[in-house]
Length: 421
Image 1: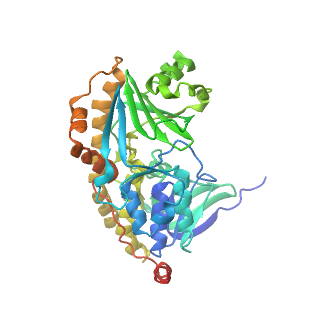
Image 2: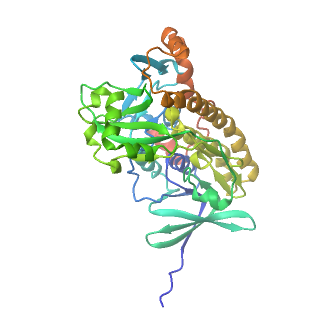
Image 3: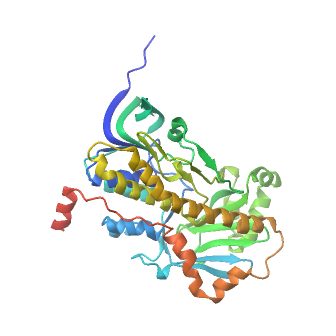
Protein backbone atom coordinates (compact mmCIF):
# COMPACT_ATOMS: atom_id res chain seq x y z
CA UNK A 1 0.00 0.00 0.00
CA UNK A 2 1.46 3.37 -1.08
CA UNK A 3 2.35 5.75 1.69
CA UNK A 4 1.53 9.42 1.61
CA UNK A 5 4.62 11.47 0.82
CA UNK A 6 6.07 13.44 3.73
CA UNK A 7 4.91 17.06 3.91
CA UNK A 8 6.98 19.80 2.38
CA UNK A 9 8.41 21.96 5.16
CA UNK A 10 9.53 25.57 4.87
CA UNK A 11 10.50 28.16 7.46
CA UNK A 12 9.71 31.86 7.47
CA UNK A 13 9.35 34.74 9.89
CA UNK A 14 5.66 35.47 9.23
CA UNK A 15 3.13 33.17 7.58
CA UNK A 16 -0.10 34.80 6.40
CA UNK A 17 -3.17 32.65 5.74
CA UNK A 18 -5.26 34.27 3.01
CA UNK A 19 -4.32 36.41 0.03
CA UNK A 20 -7.16 38.91 0.32
CA UNK A 21 -6.73 42.67 0.80
CA UNK A 22 -5.46 42.41 4.39
CA UNK A 23 -3.11 39.53 3.67
CA UNK A 24 -1.62 41.05 0.52
CA UNK A 25 -1.14 44.48 2.10
CA UNK A 26 0.49 43.02 5.22
CA UNK A 27 2.70 40.74 3.11
CA UNK A 28 3.81 43.71 1.00
CA UNK A 29 4.54 45.92 4.02
CA UNK A 30 6.50 43.30 5.93
CA UNK A 31 8.56 42.26 2.90
CA UNK A 32 9.21 45.94 2.15
CA UNK A 33 10.55 46.32 5.70
CA UNK A 34 12.88 43.33 5.28
CA UNK A 35 10.78 40.65 7.01
CA UNK A 36 10.60 37.25 5.35
CA UNK A 37 6.93 36.45 4.74
CA UNK A 38 4.94 33.63 3.13
CA UNK A 39 1.36 34.27 1.98
CA UNK A 40 -0.85 31.23 1.44
CA UNK A 41 -3.79 31.67 -0.96
CA UNK A 42 -6.12 28.72 -1.51
CA UNK A 43 -7.19 29.63 -5.05
CA UNK A 44 -5.18 29.45 -8.26
CA UNK A 45 -5.90 33.12 -9.03
CA UNK A 46 -7.75 36.11 -7.58
CA UNK A 47 -10.51 36.06 -10.20
CA UNK A 48 -13.68 35.89 -8.10
CA UNK A 49 -16.69 38.10 -8.68
CA UNK A 50 -18.99 39.82 -6.21
CA UNK A 51 -16.30 40.78 -3.74
CA UNK A 52 -15.90 44.24 -2.30
CA UNK A 53 -14.69 46.46 -5.11
CA UNK A 54 -14.46 49.87 -3.46
CA UNK A 55 -11.04 51.31 -2.65
CA UNK A 56 -11.61 54.22 -0.31
CA UNK A 57 -9.54 57.39 0.24
CA UNK A 58 -7.94 55.87 3.36
CA UNK A 59 -6.48 53.05 1.26
CA UNK A 60 -5.54 55.39 -1.59
CA UNK A 61 -3.61 57.47 0.95
CA UNK A 62 -1.69 54.37 2.02
CA UNK A 63 -0.86 53.61 -1.62
CA UNK A 64 0.40 57.17 -2.01
CA UNK A 65 2.64 56.80 1.05
CA UNK A 66 4.07 53.67 -0.57
CA UNK A 67 4.66 55.44 -3.92
CA UNK A 68 2.20 53.06 -5.57
CA UNK A 69 -0.72 55.40 -6.20
CA UNK A 70 0.27 56.69 -9.63
CA UNK A 71 0.69 53.17 -11.06
CA UNK A 72 -2.49 51.98 -9.34
CA UNK A 73 -4.60 54.71 -10.89
CA UNK A 74 -3.35 53.77 -14.36
CA UNK A 75 -5.44 50.62 -14.10
CA UNK A 76 -9.02 50.77 -15.43
CA UNK A 77 -11.32 52.12 -12.75
CA UNK A 78 -14.14 54.54 -11.99
CA UNK A 79 -13.95 57.40 -9.51
CA UNK A 80 -16.86 58.31 -7.26
CA UNK A 81 -16.79 61.74 -5.63
CA UNK A 82 -20.36 61.84 -4.34
CA UNK A 83 -22.45 58.98 -2.98
CA UNK A 84 -25.94 59.35 -4.39
CA UNK A 85 -29.13 57.52 -3.47
CA UNK A 86 -32.58 57.51 -5.01
CA UNK A 87 -35.18 57.40 -2.25
CA UNK A 88 -38.52 56.95 -3.95
CA UNK A 89 -38.66 59.73 -6.56
CA UNK A 90 -36.04 61.83 -4.74
CA UNK A 91 -32.34 62.01 -5.56
CA UNK A 92 -30.23 62.62 -2.47
CA UNK A 93 -26.47 63.19 -2.22
CA UNK A 94 -25.58 61.21 0.89
CA UNK A 95 -21.87 62.04 1.07
CA UNK A 96 -19.56 64.59 -0.52
CA UNK A 97 -15.93 63.44 -0.50
CA UNK A 98 -14.50 66.63 -1.98
CA UNK A 99 -13.56 68.04 1.45
CA UNK A 100 -11.65 65.05 2.81
CA UNK A 101 -8.11 65.82 4.04
CA UNK A 102 -6.61 63.36 1.56
CA UNK A 103 -4.91 63.61 -1.82
CA UNK A 104 -7.60 61.48 -3.46
CA UNK A 105 -11.03 62.87 -2.70
CA UNK A 106 -12.88 59.99 -4.30
CA UNK A 107 -13.62 56.28 -4.03
CA UNK A 108 -12.13 54.02 -6.69
CA UNK A 109 -14.32 51.28 -8.13
CA UNK A 110 -12.09 48.46 -9.31
CA UNK A 111 -12.60 44.68 -9.35
CA UNK A 112 -10.94 43.24 -6.29
CA UNK A 113 -8.88 40.83 -8.40
CA UNK A 114 -7.23 43.83 -10.09
CA UNK A 115 -6.32 45.32 -6.72
CA UNK A 116 -4.90 42.01 -5.47
CA UNK A 117 -2.94 41.37 -8.67
CA UNK A 118 -1.53 44.88 -8.40
CA UNK A 119 -0.42 44.35 -4.78
CA UNK A 120 1.04 40.94 -5.59
CA UNK A 121 3.03 42.40 -8.47
CA UNK A 122 4.34 45.20 -6.28
CA UNK A 123 5.27 42.79 -3.48
CA UNK A 124 7.21 40.46 -5.77
CA UNK A 125 9.84 43.16 -6.12
CA UNK A 126 11.05 42.15 -2.66
CA UNK A 127 12.97 38.87 -2.25
CA UNK A 128 11.46 38.45 1.22
CA UNK A 129 7.94 38.05 -0.27
CA UNK A 130 6.73 34.55 -1.14
CA UNK A 131 3.20 33.95 -2.47
CA UNK A 132 2.03 30.34 -2.57
CA UNK A 133 -1.14 29.96 -4.66
CA UNK A 134 -3.38 26.87 -4.42
CA UNK A 135 -2.29 26.47 -0.81
CA UNK A 136 -5.21 26.25 1.60
CA UNK A 137 -4.49 26.63 5.30
CA UNK A 138 -6.11 23.71 7.10
CA UNK A 139 -4.67 23.72 10.62
CA UNK A 140 -2.24 25.36 12.99
CA UNK A 141 0.97 23.85 14.33
CA UNK A 142 1.18 24.21 18.09
CA UNK A 143 3.95 23.60 20.61
CA UNK A 144 3.25 24.16 24.31
CA UNK A 145 0.18 26.30 23.59
CA UNK A 146 2.16 28.56 21.23
CA UNK A 147 1.28 28.61 17.53
CA UNK A 148 4.39 27.73 15.57
CA UNK A 149 3.11 27.56 12.03
CA UNK A 150 0.44 26.43 9.58
CA UNK A 151 -0.43 23.18 7.88
CA UNK A 152 -1.77 23.63 4.36
CA UNK A 153 -3.12 21.49 1.53
CA UNK A 154 -1.62 22.07 -1.91
CA UNK A 155 -2.00 20.37 -5.28
CA UNK A 156 1.40 18.77 -4.66
CA UNK A 157 0.54 17.46 -1.21
CA UNK A 158 0.75 18.68 2.35
CA UNK A 159 2.77 21.76 3.26
CA UNK A 160 3.98 22.80 6.70
CA UNK A 161 5.12 26.38 7.23
CA UNK A 162 7.03 27.06 10.44
CA UNK A 163 6.87 30.72 11.44
CA UNK A 164 7.58 33.08 14.30
CA UNK A 165 4.13 34.58 13.72
CA UNK A 166 0.99 33.31 11.98
CA UNK A 167 -1.51 35.92 10.80
CA UNK A 168 -5.03 34.80 9.92
CA UNK A 169 -6.42 36.81 7.02
CA UNK A 170 -8.65 34.01 5.74
CA UNK A 171 -11.97 35.80 5.99
CA UNK A 172 -15.16 35.70 7.98
CA UNK A 173 -15.22 31.89 7.93
CA UNK A 174 -11.59 31.71 9.02
CA UNK A 175 -10.26 28.18 9.41
CA UNK A 176 -7.30 29.44 11.40
CA UNK A 177 -9.32 31.30 14.03
CA UNK A 178 -11.58 28.24 14.41
CA UNK A 179 -8.59 25.92 14.87
CA UNK A 180 -7.13 28.37 17.38
CA UNK A 181 -10.33 28.25 19.45
CA UNK A 182 -10.77 32.03 19.56
CA UNK A 183 -14.16 33.20 20.85
CA UNK A 184 -16.39 34.96 18.32
CA UNK A 185 -18.96 37.50 19.53
CA UNK A 186 -21.98 37.49 17.21
CA UNK A 187 -23.47 40.96 16.78
CA UNK A 188 -26.03 40.01 14.16
CA UNK A 189 -27.30 41.19 10.80
CA UNK A 190 -30.99 41.18 9.77
CA UNK A 191 -30.18 41.25 6.04
CA UNK A 192 -28.65 39.21 3.25
CA UNK A 193 -27.54 40.37 -0.19
CA UNK A 194 -28.13 38.90 -3.63
CA UNK A 195 -25.38 39.77 -6.10
CA UNK A 196 -25.82 39.73 -9.88
CA UNK A 197 -24.66 41.57 -12.96
CA UNK A 198 -26.67 43.40 -15.63
CA UNK A 199 -25.18 45.05 -18.71
CA UNK A 200 -24.73 48.82 -18.71
CA UNK A 201 -25.52 51.23 -21.54
CA UNK A 202 -23.88 54.57 -22.20
CA UNK A 203 -27.25 56.25 -21.61
CA UNK A 204 -27.52 54.84 -18.08
CA UNK A 205 -26.85 57.03 -15.03
CA UNK A 206 -23.14 57.37 -14.34
CA UNK A 207 -23.26 56.14 -10.76
CA UNK A 208 -25.73 55.16 -8.07
CA UNK A 209 -25.14 54.27 -4.45
CA UNK A 210 -28.60 52.87 -3.86
CA UNK A 211 -32.25 52.85 -4.83
CA UNK A 212 -34.95 52.44 -2.21
CA UNK A 213 -38.72 52.25 -2.67
CA UNK A 214 -41.75 50.10 -1.83
CA UNK A 215 -39.88 47.47 0.17
CA UNK A 216 -37.03 47.11 -2.32
CA UNK A 217 -33.40 48.10 -1.82
CA UNK A 218 -30.90 47.93 -4.69
CA UNK A 219 -27.26 49.05 -4.73
CA UNK A 220 -25.55 49.45 -8.11
CA UNK A 221 -21.82 49.72 -8.81
CA UNK A 222 -20.64 50.96 -12.19
CA UNK A 223 -18.24 48.42 -13.74
CA UNK A 224 -18.08 50.39 -17.02
CA UNK A 225 -19.77 47.85 -19.29
CA UNK A 226 -22.01 46.27 -16.66
CA UNK A 227 -23.65 47.00 -13.34
CA UNK A 228 -22.70 44.97 -10.31
CA UNK A 229 -26.01 44.86 -8.48
CA UNK A 230 -26.65 44.09 -4.83
CA UNK A 231 -30.29 43.39 -4.00
CA UNK A 232 -30.84 43.57 -0.25
CA UNK A 233 -33.30 41.09 1.29
CA UNK A 234 -34.35 40.15 4.83
CA UNK A 235 -32.10 37.60 6.52
CA UNK A 236 -32.97 34.11 5.29
CA UNK A 237 -35.42 35.49 2.72
CA UNK A 238 -34.01 33.81 -0.39
CA UNK A 239 -36.34 30.80 -0.29
CA UNK A 240 -39.41 33.06 -0.21
CA UNK A 241 -38.08 35.04 -3.18
CA UNK A 242 -37.36 31.87 -5.14
CA UNK A 243 -40.86 30.60 -4.38
CA UNK A 244 -42.30 33.67 -6.10
CA UNK A 245 -40.37 32.80 -9.24
CA UNK A 246 -37.60 34.33 -11.31
CA UNK A 247 -40.01 36.44 -13.35
CA UNK A 248 -41.28 38.17 -10.21
CA UNK A 249 -37.69 38.78 -9.09
CA UNK A 250 -36.79 40.37 -12.42
CA UNK A 251 -39.92 42.49 -12.24
CA UNK A 252 -38.87 43.73 -8.81
CA UNK A 253 -35.47 44.81 -10.16
CA UNK A 254 -37.17 46.66 -13.03
CA UNK A 255 -39.53 48.42 -10.61
CA UNK A 256 -36.72 49.82 -8.50
CA UNK A 257 -34.47 50.65 -11.51
CA UNK A 258 -36.80 51.18 -14.51
CA UNK A 259 -33.94 51.84 -16.96
CA UNK A 260 -32.94 48.17 -16.53
CA UNK A 261 -36.34 46.92 -17.75
CA UNK A 262 -34.98 45.89 -21.15
CA UNK A 263 -32.09 43.93 -19.58
CA UNK A 264 -33.34 42.14 -16.49
CA UNK A 265 -33.82 38.97 -18.53
CA UNK A 266 -30.01 38.75 -18.65
CA UNK A 267 -30.45 37.15 -15.23
CA UNK A 268 -31.35 33.83 -16.81
CA UNK A 269 -31.52 31.64 -13.72
CA UNK A 270 -30.87 31.42 -10.01
CA UNK A 271 -27.30 30.32 -10.76
CA UNK A 272 -26.68 33.87 -12.00
CA UNK A 273 -27.53 35.19 -8.52
CA UNK A 274 -25.02 34.79 -5.68
CA UNK A 275 -26.09 34.92 -2.04
CA UNK A 276 -23.98 36.82 0.49
CA UNK A 277 -25.09 35.78 3.95
CA UNK A 278 -24.33 38.97 5.87
CA UNK A 279 -22.65 38.61 9.26
CA UNK A 280 -21.44 41.17 11.75
CA UNK A 281 -19.15 39.76 14.43
CA UNK A 282 -15.78 40.24 16.08
CA UNK A 283 -13.35 38.27 18.19
CA UNK A 284 -13.19 38.99 21.89
CA UNK A 285 -9.45 38.40 21.66
CA UNK A 286 -7.68 38.68 18.32
CA UNK A 287 -4.58 36.73 19.26
CA UNK A 288 -2.91 33.95 21.20
CA UNK A 289 0.84 33.28 21.48
CA UNK A 290 2.24 33.10 17.96
CA UNK A 291 -1.05 33.97 16.24
CA UNK A 292 -2.87 37.16 15.21
CA UNK A 293 -6.19 37.63 13.38
CA UNK A 294 -6.94 40.76 11.34
CA UNK A 295 -9.50 41.84 8.75
CA UNK A 296 -12.65 39.75 8.42
CA UNK A 297 -10.99 36.96 10.41
CA UNK A 298 -11.07 39.32 13.40
CA UNK A 299 -14.25 41.26 12.60
CA UNK A 300 -16.80 40.49 9.89
CA UNK A 301 -18.41 43.68 8.60
CA UNK A 302 -21.77 44.40 6.99
CA UNK A 303 -21.55 45.50 3.33
CA UNK A 304 -23.13 48.83 4.34
CA UNK A 305 -20.76 51.59 3.29
CA UNK A 306 -18.41 49.15 1.56
CA UNK A 307 -15.88 49.72 4.35
CA UNK A 308 -14.84 46.13 5.08
CA UNK A 309 -11.87 45.98 2.70
CA UNK A 310 -10.55 49.32 3.83
CA UNK A 311 -10.89 48.49 7.52
CA UNK A 312 -8.97 45.27 6.87
CA UNK A 313 -6.20 47.19 5.10
CA UNK A 314 -5.99 49.61 8.02
CA UNK A 315 -5.52 46.57 10.29
CA UNK A 316 -2.69 45.42 8.05
CA UNK A 317 -0.94 48.79 8.13
CA UNK A 318 -1.24 48.97 11.92
CA UNK A 319 0.04 45.40 12.27
CA UNK A 320 3.10 46.16 10.13
CA UNK A 321 3.79 49.36 12.06
CA UNK A 322 3.56 47.69 15.47
CA UNK A 323 5.06 44.28 14.71
CA UNK A 324 7.51 45.02 11.90
CA UNK A 325 10.57 46.02 13.97
CA UNK A 326 10.16 43.04 16.30
CA UNK A 327 9.62 40.60 13.43
CA UNK A 328 12.85 41.75 11.83
CA UNK A 329 14.48 40.26 14.93
CA UNK A 330 12.40 37.07 14.59
CA UNK A 331 10.10 37.77 17.53
CA UNK A 332 6.40 38.55 18.01
CA UNK A 333 5.85 39.27 21.71
CA UNK A 334 2.30 38.76 22.89
CA UNK A 335 2.34 42.29 24.31
CA UNK A 336 2.58 43.67 20.78
CA UNK A 337 -0.32 41.48 19.63
CA UNK A 338 -2.37 42.91 22.47
CA UNK A 339 -1.29 46.42 21.51
CA UNK A 340 -2.50 45.88 17.95
CA UNK A 341 -5.92 44.76 19.14
CA UNK A 342 -6.17 47.72 21.50
CA UNK A 343 -5.39 50.11 18.68
CA UNK A 344 -7.84 48.61 16.19
CA UNK A 345 -10.73 47.79 18.53
CA UNK A 346 -12.18 51.31 18.70
CA UNK A 347 -12.44 51.90 14.92
CA UNK A 348 -13.89 48.40 14.50
CA UNK A 349 -16.52 48.78 17.22
CA UNK A 350 -17.44 52.29 16.09
CA UNK A 351 -17.91 51.24 12.46
CA UNK A 352 -19.87 48.13 13.39
CA UNK A 353 -22.05 50.27 15.64
CA UNK A 354 -22.93 52.56 12.75
CA UNK A 355 -23.58 49.59 10.49
CA UNK A 356 -25.90 47.95 13.01
CA UNK A 357 -27.75 51.25 13.50
CA UNK A 358 -28.18 51.59 9.73
CA UNK A 359 -29.32 47.97 9.42
CA UNK A 360 -31.89 48.24 12.21
CA UNK A 361 -33.12 51.80 11.76
CA UNK A 362 -32.83 52.38 8.02
CA UNK A 363 -32.52 49.21 5.93
CA UNK A 364 -34.92 46.92 7.81
CA UNK A 365 -37.77 49.51 7.98
CA UNK A 366 -37.25 50.21 4.25
CA UNK A 367 -37.60 46.49 3.46
CA UNK A 368 -40.68 46.13 5.66
CA UNK A 369 -42.54 49.08 4.16
CA UNK A 370 -44.35 48.08 0.96
CA UNK A 371 -45.80 51.50 0.20
CA UNK A 372 -44.29 53.95 -2.27
CA UNK A 373 -42.09 56.63 -0.72
CA UNK A 374 -43.53 60.09 -1.25
CA UNK A 375 -41.72 62.27 1.25
CA UNK A 376 -38.15 62.14 2.54
CA UNK A 377 -37.34 61.44 6.20
CA UNK A 378 -36.09 64.46 8.17
CA UNK A 379 -32.44 63.32 8.14
CA UNK A 380 -32.39 63.12 4.34
CA UNK A 381 -34.13 66.46 4.04
CA UNK A 382 -31.34 67.93 6.14
CA UNK A 383 -28.70 66.40 3.84
CA UNK A 384 -30.41 68.00 0.86
CA UNK A 385 -30.86 71.36 2.54
CA UNK A 386 -27.52 71.60 4.34
CA UNK A 387 -24.71 70.38 2.03
CA UNK A 388 -22.12 70.78 4.79
CA UNK A 389 -23.72 67.82 6.59
CA UNK A 390 -22.67 65.55 3.72
CA UNK A 391 -19.10 65.83 4.96
CA UNK A 392 -19.93 63.68 8.01
CA UNK A 393 -20.86 60.44 6.19
CA UNK A 394 -18.05 61.18 3.73
CA UNK A 395 -15.56 61.19 6.59
CA UNK A 396 -16.96 57.97 8.10
CA UNK A 397 -17.04 56.07 4.80
CA UNK A 398 -13.92 57.58 3.27
CA UNK A 399 -11.55 57.51 6.22
CA UNK A 400 -13.15 55.63 9.11
CA UNK A 401 -12.42 56.41 12.74
CA UNK A 402 -8.68 55.82 12.93
CA UNK A 403 -6.95 55.90 9.55
CA UNK A 404 -3.49 54.40 9.65
CA UNK A 405 -0.34 55.72 8.02
CA UNK A 406 2.72 53.76 6.91
CA UNK A 407 5.51 53.93 9.49
CA UNK A 408 7.47 50.85 8.51
CA UNK A 409 10.82 51.71 6.94
CA UNK A 410 11.46 51.21 3.27
CA UNK A 411 13.99 48.55 2.34
CA UNK A 412 17.49 49.52 1.23
CA UNK A 413 16.57 48.49 -2.34
CA UNK A 414 13.47 50.68 -2.37
CA UNK A 415 15.38 53.67 -1.00
CA UNK A 416 18.01 53.24 -3.70
CA UNK A 417 15.35 53.01 -6.40
CA UNK A 418 13.64 56.14 -5.08
CA UNK A 419 16.94 58.03 -5.05
CA UNK A 420 17.71 56.92 -8.60
CA UNK A 421 14.24 57.92 -9.79
